[in-house]
Image 1: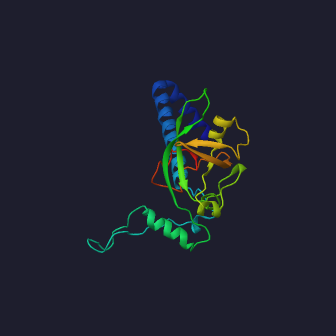
Image 2 (image 1 turned 180 degrees about the horizontal axis):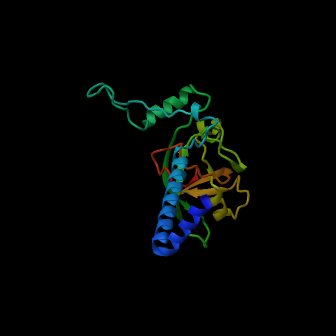
Image 3 (image 1 turned 90 degrees about the vertical axis):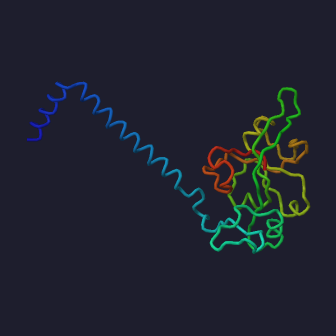
Length: 211
């Protein structure tokens, strides 16, 4: 019985080739759209750091006085510098990082390259172990270097290849915003999507090369 109805269907398709082609195209487009939607949903809803996401917390503090306070209102999305530095000094957590995002100019100091802009992450030393950043060379800086305001930096692999042709650049300098910074580490390929450690600056299209 199935073979009989299958033959009838084939005959019908041959009589209406244009309609059949349109139906097949519509089904194909529907399947393609559904798969695309499912893929995007999976990417957006995935946990970028599942083994420790339940132990990572984003701190919010209300820096204003009680005047004008409305119960239920969310505090400011970002901390003041004073609050962030005070929390860092108190060291209440095993790891804690103060950070903000921005851009800056790198001067390669070679005739073949002109100064160029890169994404930057201004942060403290615990950033790297907190977010499991992979290192190609070297490592992040120490707490003592944080306390001493050492002029050190970690750079991304792309920037390292551009400035130093991919060689181990630990101990060398990068001129960032007019300041020479000693390189202590070079990250391996690392571009988390979304940018889960800072959801306010370029969630999906931002790439940072200087830390």
